[in-house]
Image (cartoon, rainbow, N blue to C red; front, top):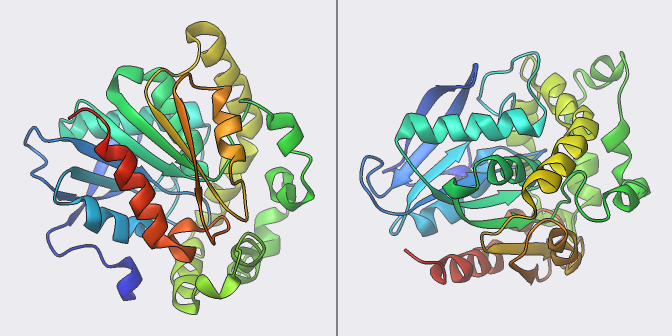
Length: 294
């Protein structure tokens, strides 16, 4: 493992059972059994919770830091189902219960945005603030228009042969995302590519990844139902987009799903914000968190 994925020595890893599965979780910062503020960091596709190492190190002095691998991804268990984001939002609520954490500031990227939205929609009192980074949320705002973007063909990539097509070729498949969604593909390093490709080559990992996307139609139905029943999210929301990716459009997307939205742009970055411009990403997140009540 390269230094890019090295969490502080004070962090520990645990396997935590929640909602019928088991999550691999990195824990550090303030004592987890204390009463300080807590932050939950959720990763997206093509990466794992390892993506947050630098941000976790920055937040450790002030927060209880919780960094899971999502259901089916990284070193978490890979069950056959449960990849709709409503279920995964409940995964996260169960994780907080297991840790004795009542509420968190939530920071998410990519698929993590979708899991985070389901957590915030179902358990709003447990999410003090919500930072979403560079990915839409199914059923929220201009979702149907976003689906028409040809770069997002993988949202609909399915069928009985998809896992067989990429078996042993996981790196080829993932390179496409790391290259095409970067402003500068060289910033997603060879070390990082090898690291994540090996994790996605584990038994069941590609199945779980495809299942995350296959659930989008149900996710859209669920999210529209959340909004119809309870209205838009009311906690403070920071919607960040990479300058060469969603950019300021993230705030426009989230205005349809939340009432208190601040927009922001990660400069000189495409989709992979922690690889392409970690310094700016960390500064934007820290500044927003610093403005939240303790």
